[in-house]
Image (cartoon, rainbow, N blue to C red):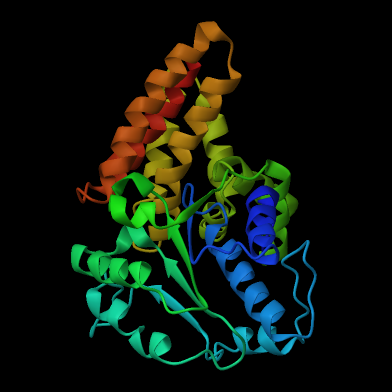
Length: 320
């Protein structure tokens, strides 16, 4: 579902309709804000508009019964590919996009498009290509066959090869408003209650993908626990922090623990923004400490109960 991003959408469609279509577009911005949804919608629109019957020029909306939309929904459009990380022999998602995945696009480029004048490749994401894959992709950018369109996502464009960036037209994406995030979450998870959606919006920071990734973690309950910690007396806060930490350390608490690692820094960041200047400095200091601890907890394999307890005490520090 595509919500927001009207400005990059208008720029993209104007280029296509005006006959000034660049063959490669770099979609940049923080993770989870809708770059992939944009790329998918833009790809379907290009394929539909160039194949007929006509679709609107001022929107990416394509009727679901349109032949191109039906093929895309079924994952069987012959002129569309996604380039992304694959799973290994053990069923685990690889950490990078390998050169083999890039080379597998060769048959698409060696023939003319079947359904229209365009072939479209969505890359999610360029940041995840290893060096060999990046160099192989660069060759495709340098000598693209006519009618080729690349829609390449990047969360950190500064890390890309300069030669790749220079061959792409950049579209910059901004975080969505809280209202827009709530709209996406409600549409994608219609069974969620209003309180849970509000809690997800609060932690999303304008990224609906982030909210949806936490939708099964009981964010509303965790937020209520943090609200209580933020005003608890010192002795009470320690007991509350320990109880919460124990609940996040069990074998079945994996998702809630990961959500907690995201939630606490976001909670303290909001406190820093909304509290009076005299108290915001304290909140900023707590946020810095929480951000460092939460950011390295998984990579360093830190013990979950200890991490959760320390993070909970940092939130309790708001009451001091």
